[in-house]
Image (cartoon, rainbow, N blue to C red; front, side, top):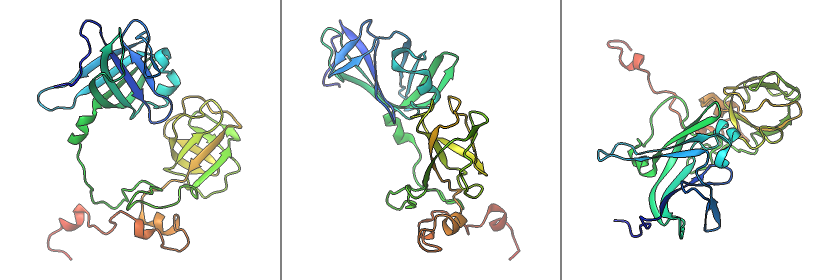
Length: 281
């Protein structure tokens, strides 16, 4: 049982969203804003907390929020850029007469992918306890499963600083195709890497994955929310195709094969066609 419950006569729900980057969002379903622990929980104008649902069958519990983009601090740019993807959310009840933050915790969860339809947004998620339902462990494959430049124990260990470059755009074809004519790196150097703008309309939005790079032309899988502008500055991280050849020839540090020791793939595992063949060498 809960150690503390809100007074049922003045009970209201509150929602705190903590994005992976940026400032938290504070919301309440009370008609007026509530101040708790120095935070102002904005009233429900422009959004609806569609509820928390759980079943006795241990299926994943759902947490959903939808509303008008731009209301209650949830901006269209933030939703469109995926800023709330993977954000933590905390739902609790309290009394509007004497509000206390996290007085009666209801659930904590992780938001999934956010969607933007015209001027409305919708974000769905699951409870943190449902992380226990996720499959864990490693799988064997030819490609390296490690995050490029990861510095965790047993990680890639390639230097993030050494593989990060900066520059400015010299021409723009679309929100997903733009050029920096000063880039002289070989084709595909930044393929599967990421690019993030540090100035201009997209400054501060999440980095996007690079689809291809050749002769200074950068193409991303997804378009940036705003159309980039010539002169916008960016930060770009080289990509890794997760192949053994990348560790040998591209992320080699001071010696030819120095990062092969950190390669996590299994290039010599036979394929189905090999080990399923009968009667052949």
